[in-house]
Image 1 (tube, rainbow, N blue to C red):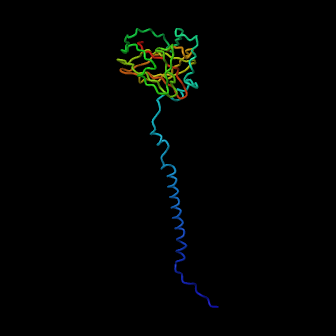
Image 2 (image 1 turned 135 degrees about the horizontal axis):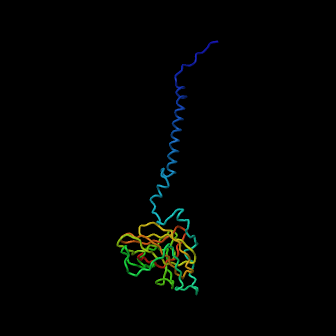
Image 3 (image 1 turned 45 degrees about the horizontal axis):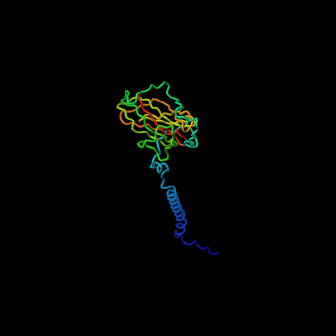
Length: 244
């Protein structure tokens, strides 16, 4: 039997076998790159939600956190309709006080150590800063016959026109109306917020007052009243700033 020699080896077959893995590897790289690009597009270019939200405007600066929520009143509405009961008489208004010591009476117009004369500002005064959600209602027992309701729920009523010639402490008297005990945040000037308890005045058409000590800065000051989301202040009639 005659044996045939194998055909001469040209190297083409080896090149074909060796080139196939390189082609597959390149194809895998392309697929991975396309998937990475698609994932980046779907996630918004890699930006985080915090980056997009940081440019949004902030809401009213009402105190928040555990301390703010601890004693906040959580009523379902800012105030119920006034009862107009016969027992609610302006002369019978109660006057609970949160001050540890009695507040000495002051002579209207007399300056204090801060150079601040006694001054009363109505809650409904046009110069005050009042969000549109707050409304003015008629109350015969209130000073000027009107009071402001809807204070709180992350909204602030700002009393303006309080002036002191120099920094110092004064007595702030707040006249309010509420059928139940409520708590509200108050701040004078650029000072710290105070969490103040307002005992029930007895009816929505009955006025009560509390007195506390606050510090004013020299020059123009504001008195602010507000509350956290879902919590309401009592309706406010007026404030009086007087020498201590």
